[in-house]
Image 1 (cartoon, rainbow, N blue to C red):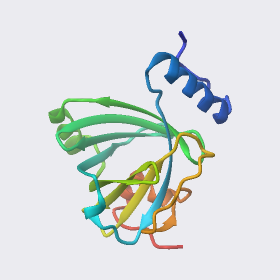
Image 2 (image 1 turned 90 degrees about the vertical axis):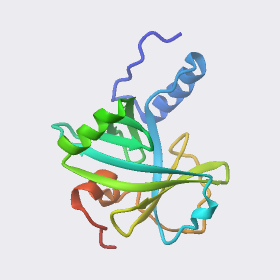
Image 3 (image 1 turned 180 degrees about the horizontal axis):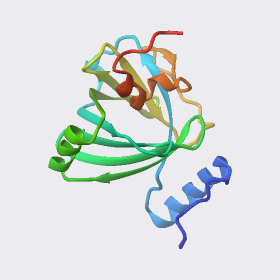
Length: 183
């Protein structure tokens, strides 16, 4: 069993991914690593979804280069700290908090909020998360991967990838209050 769960940031991500897989197999616990791609969606037939979640999330200003997010997820609530390791990979630490505390944080500590409905869409052995923003005319899709090298089949409703466009991060969308212009 591994005693020290921390990883130094200077390790290459490929090593970290291998270590993560080993750790999860040996310990039965999940490490906080998120590898995902993000896309713009033209239209999405919501009847294709296998699940639907109402999400309100906000962001708390921080002095570091990551984000602190408060999120309600139907009747549950979470506090999340995320920071980017590279183009596709972020470390993510998420903790369930009392729902009433999340509502207070969203009202009093967050500088902006997003209101969206998330639809779960199974496609080619992946669960796609399709976010319809209720406060603006925008639909985004995200898919999580097990490694940065993983090839992912892209559904036909995808318009274009915006993984590398920081304007489409939820934090940026929240801060800017609108839909980015197409470049």
